[in-house]
Image (cartoon, rainbow, N blue to C red; front, side, top):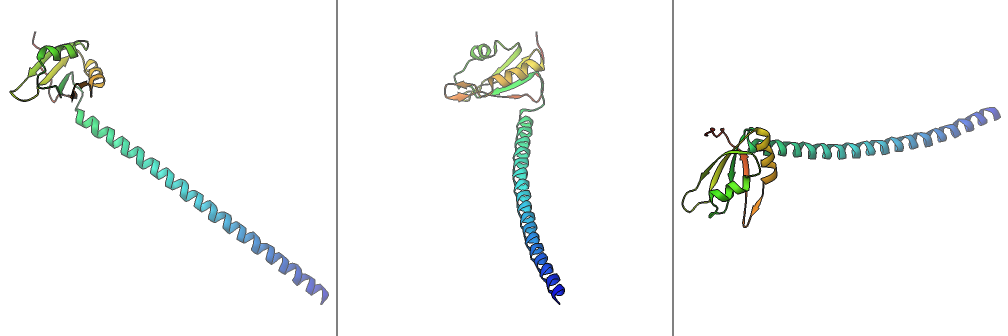
Length: 149
């Protein structure tokens, strides 16, 4: 009977220890699960932010059009002359400039460059250039401006 009591006591102690261990393991696994959930949430938010940024870049690139050696330029002041436009683009290997101005409206210009690289460089340097109260906006033209000597 004494042996049986000791065995029962040892067994009950082990059961209590086992219960404590299981509770601790359960708490640890719940904590690990919460940590994994937090990590996944932060990863997903970062992924979504990057994807959104990538789509925004793709959308803006689509607005700029397919790279050509001709740029479409708007955003000049109403009183801006062809000579002033030529001066603005003079350091960018311009091959030809087409200047259009209608009465009461700001002028627009099509500018053909020696290469696509020169047009791209000009676009990146002058995009958003401030001319007093207006801002120059550039995009690749839909068609190349023909070369005329």
